[in-house]
Image (cartoon, rainbow, N blue to C red; front, side, top):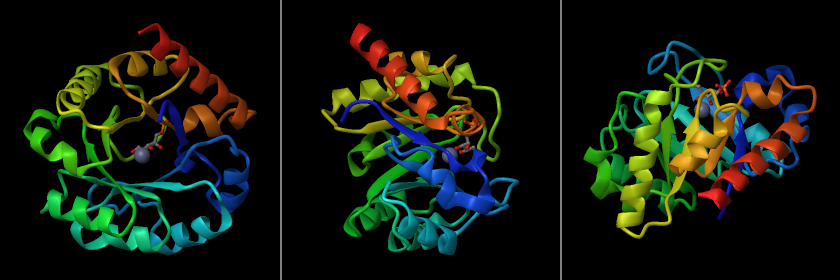
Length: 222
Ligand code: DX5
Ligand code: ZN
């Protein structure tokens, strides 16, 4: 699939989500951060807003659920129109069943790991997933500093995916910018979420182009 950029609407103007989506026509996905004020200490948007956004934008939605009980709530985001739904393994009771359910609904199934959650215990589960999200900040807020300590896990995930011959997308999210994207691409990430770096810029679509070029150049060099 190559390099993909998924700008996070968390850093955009929530009063005009459709307008913000229109500013990034070159995005591969729109990253939607769903927070429930329980799994993380912040509250954002839920299913009705995702549904409205899916209808107003032709860019597919990449929903990142930072919520408790994703087993119960995640399928509703596919019904709302998301093309990819990522749940946190720390919150899921039955991640295999949930991933199968999301795939069965026709969506891509993603699983996220907080910075302190290792990937190795989930090696056997990787074939059930379309994407693994390695968080590079503690989930909950945009604008935080990138945690370099997460890079070995990105590298390890790519090793495990290769070992099993999987076409697993590897997403990084948190503090991704011109300063950090190359390290992530070098470690094996191929889907990049960027909130502040994109939406706080004068020209968000130009930032997407340049982040993509940086990641592609890194991939070619490696
Ligand atoms: C944080 C969210 C991220 C956030 C990234 O919990 O999952 O998607 O929007 O924002 P930046 O790119 O500003 O770190
Ligand atoms: Zn996110």
